Image (cartoon, rainbow, N blue to C red; front, side, top):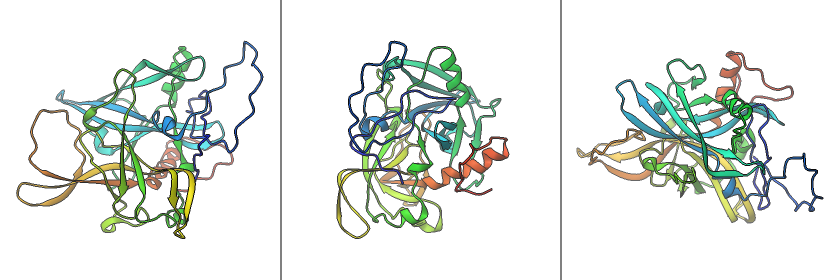
Length: 333
């Protein structure tokens, strides 16, 4: 699992529709000489939190009846191998299924390879006619992906480069690494609860929490784990990151110092008790409405483990996508 250090940086510009990834630098690099005028400026070093700020995107959707919904998605680089791969936006199946339109705002990038806060490109996808939306092959797994490499290339060619940071396979723990986690770990949820965001700067909301069940176990026999965090309408599809800043406890119970960041899962549902006293877990609601709900929330979120995201790669191969030479898929067809 890739860990992000205090001196993490992102790679500046996207190449072939592939977004910059979470990157790490183990040492402070020496100050380089001033580049020639024709050379692109070097991106500044960003902290882990600054990188995570640019992973999530607000999804505004509409169904055939014109009803509006909101959810969260996040950028993910599939088949990542150097500067090769395919970029998608990961979200929940229930966020996009049955919708006719998806609208997003992507932050622009400055010539200095930095986010141009407040400047965006408006992206609209016609769900019914667009083949870029792929549902998870297991109908019990509430995941979907929107492939966007072509759109990123389109805006690049129109001199509207996009600034975002994509997660990838390296941030997803292997089965062996999962067993090294404690049952209780600190997590960071990045998303848009109730559709809330900093609209002036086009950035998401951070929320802190902890794992409520071990990430290495299947809660109630299903591919899911629980987090102790307030999950609201619009949180569907939010990435859940392991987020340790300063110190954490390793599998041997020993304190460790530094940064530790990884992608643990994706929010899909919430626990609540109905007015009749029925305890249930339901998909996190997405509809934008003023309706008052009387169900009692438990501040428990249900999450799909992040390794399920990799199941999309064999599906993409079946659709004709070819992994870069040297890339080995964890999920098998």
